[in-house]
Length: 317
Image 1 (cartoon, rainbow, N blue to C red):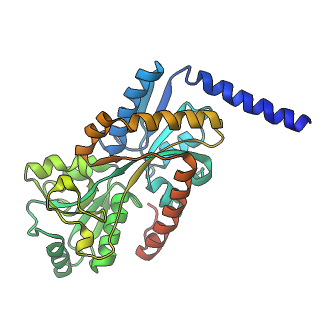
Image 2 (image 1 turned 120 degrees about the vertical axis):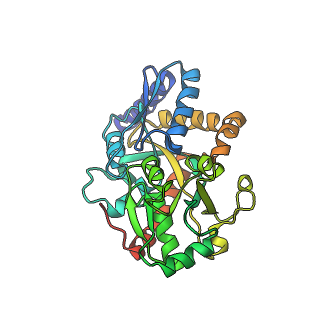
Image 3 (image 1 turned 90 degrees about the horizontal axis):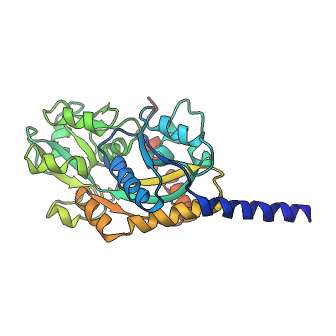
């Protein structure tokens, strides 16, 4: 009887907390610099949540450690629902394989809330590089082995894995140059200090429009309508497919009713047509689902990319 009374008391306490949540500021930690897709989505969420909840929702960019510094901070925060992580897939599906010294386990110390987006990834080269298609890039790389440099946001990042798969499937060899975020890498890409980049569309489309970068292909299995006749890389390399995602997380052991309330509100905001229309031109497709479904998806992604990491010989920094 005492055990059942204890369980009932916990259920009622969780419900009571959810009813008043949030009654103070909420923090969304983004483990990447400002300006990229994760930051854009976090700030979109924050502004909309503030209107609904009448509480401050603050976005904090906490970079470093292949996104592990920001993720670690959330994992170790109080499990009260007031500290969130909005992070890319590599924190959960690649960093566990390659991180050398983490003090948390992203698969057990962080609670999935919902996926928030799929990110349109594009393969681009500087205007000065004498290639105009995926086929020509592969031929050029084969003729100049280890002369091309490709950038990424760090070892095991989506950019790194996308290029690693391109190398494996294309039978080419390039040099990896990791950066602390997309912005500094693109600054080196424009003048040709690095020659290949596969990354989020929102940071690339303005430079493609200006003619400073050449768009060779996209990483998804199918062509994107907003890119006209740009082919998918998989049309040249059969089976090539990279569909980077972003997710929202909280510390493990957050009360179930708080988790449900956050999931419901985030899904409502990201499901609004005006929000979708605002982010779609930046190559951001908004996606949400229940926490348990998202958790199953993460496990499948973890197993899929583990095989690529092993085959490509990717190691931590």
